[in-house]
View (cartoon, rainbow, N blue to C red):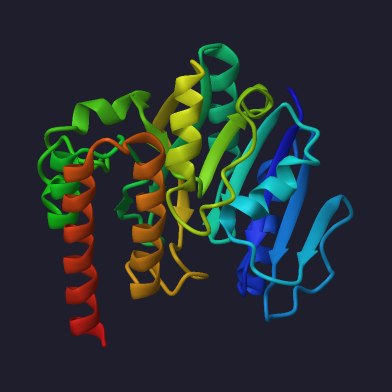
Length: 279
């Protein structure tokens, strides 16, 4: 089996990061691998009891997800690169299944597994590039019950799809396996994204260069979701997503002015409601 490089970003989640590194080390012990931990300007102390072979890059300031990942991409030596959030736990079966899928499907450059919450509940982690209708379904949460949204949900309409690999537009950067040749062809992540949407951008560029993106719902990882960003759905996360999505739309959909207006309108409403409820 080819060598696997795993990049993990730490930002004030030192205890969880150590557990994730230990979990990955156990899951990947049967084949060659390396682990690169980016300590992204944490105020917590990331202790030095990692096993030999773990490379730690310390940043004085939080450079954001994309820039942090790029630091790891510059030094990886593996043929396959796993981006793994510091709150995502992966097992051996999932690693092997993802690598085997990329090995057996030359046209696919990126693959991601299904994500679940710690109690086993489904977590949307793949989907399609935004349109007005897709974003309406996402913001209204109707996309959980009606297929066709920006996020791919598991429901009665999509249940059959989840028994096999699904071709999608993007998978979450929280657990994304990339062929190194994709990075060699399209370059690094766009560091202008501080947090959120950088995975959509990277997948968009991959598809533009004829590398398909696949979602593997037959294997899964456990994602605690948002420990370093204020929690799932926090006002901070929503505001950062809005900034990043506007960059994405400006890069690839600059002529769709009405679409951008609708997106920003929906985003402002969601942030307003959240702040009123959880202030």
